[in-house]
Amino acid sequence: MAAGWEAWPGTTGSMAAPDNGGMAKETDEVDRIVEAWIAQRPDLDFSPLEVLSRVDRLSRHLDRARRDAFRRSNLEPWEWDVLSALRRAGEPFQLSPKQLLQQTLVSSGTMTNRIDRLVDRLLVRREADPGDGRSILVILTDDGKTRVDAAITRLVDAEAMLLATLARGDRERLAGLLRKLSLGFDA
Picture 1: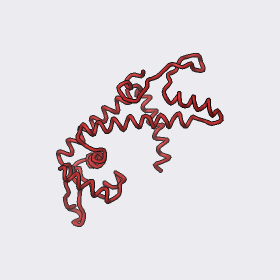
Picture 2: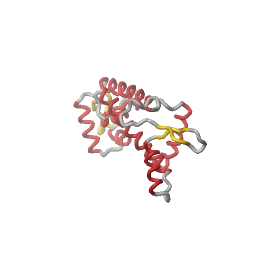
Picture 3: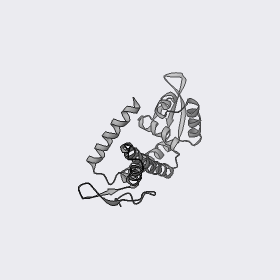
Picture 4: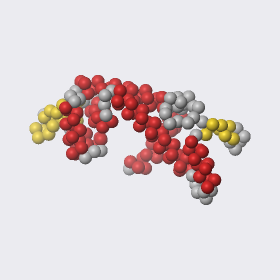
């Protein structure tokens, strides 16, 4: 079993299988699934499945790690989205509802509801925008800042554990490949 993964539920570890060069290589559940499909449908190219099934499985582990980091900071994932946008804005940790919409990609009705709930929890406050009396600003409170800072620390630690089996160079190459892939969708 690969170091760092044994702590994550749902991982099955690895087994040795013969490689083309006679050397053993580690295999995972996706390898076993693809191998079974190749036996049944040798006419298909399963290389996309080899990549994207792993991305999907890793996404589940990441989702669990993120939810745990947020839960331990007494935050819901949607609260994290809003609070982290405010925190990333820097001092004085404030954005307009429109800016929050652009960063969180939710509808205006959803954002209004989220801001209301965060105000009720004393994690943000609303103030009139001094530059435009018709607008408001959403401002991160000290409690909101404390929680989002704790959550990002926990999140970075959890994500580092997920990547513990990769050397820094491997992480950088993987990040570059994923960036290249995602740019096709973000355009």
